[in-house]
Amino acid sequence: MSRSLVVALLLAFGTVSGCYNPNITDGGLACGPGNACPDDFHCSNGRCYRAVDAGRDTGTVVCTSPTPAALCSRDPGARACDPACNSGCKCGWCGIDGNGAIACLTGTPGTKAEGDVCDPSQTADCQPGLRCRSESCGGLGRCYKFCDTNADCPAQGTSCSVNGGTLCSLPDPGCKPVAMTGCPNGFACYPTGNTAYCDCPGTSGANGGCMFTHDCMAGYGCVGPANAGLCKKVCNTNSDCGGLGLCTAAGAFGYCL
Image 1: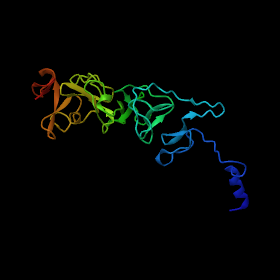
Image 2 (image 1 turned 90 degrees about the vertical axis):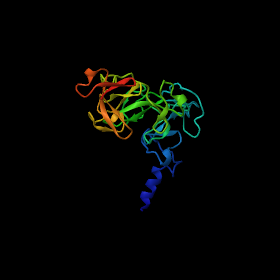
Image 3 (image 1 turned 30 degrees about the vertical axis):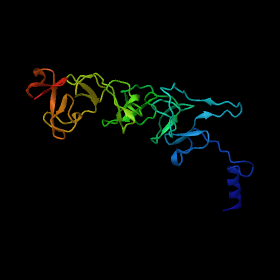
């Protein structure tokens, strides 16, 4: 290497005239192993962002992102913050970053509520305390509530049972499986016990095989023994069956048998 090139490199990195103190712009540096970033920065979506303005001239710390109110308070343990409580962040809110890690996120929080359709490619499409979980229909997702225990899932009939016990099941949407109404676009209403739920629509039609109710087309449910069910039309009266049998009650719903 030529002497002139060595001198140029030393000058570029400040080792001749002073200490190395690079000017890193927000998002201008990729996160290192374990989401590592320089001091005063945090990792989000695989890039390093400045969480706060350290205020070296004034001695104050100014948060440049909204910090929504905490939903509850408890020790986050080894985690960076508590996503179910949305607590533990001095700046921003607690969620899942682009690497799938719990982190304090900055920018503008999402506005979509629990159960709303969302974009799973975004880290901030749902309100703080919620996560956009990818569903199996056309790249759609829905906003689920973070949880550690069932106590974090206050809605009646919900439990901390989704995504390995990190998200609450969604509340009963009050949809109508016979009329096929009450679910967001891209989802279908299915009977389950005495309630109903919205899920990605299946493709199995009348008398087609099914393992789960949502294996069936919209307007049908899975009837029969586990792993050997058949899709039957959901009904309220015989007139709903259209020649597919008689409407036979099974809990809160009937099936054309």
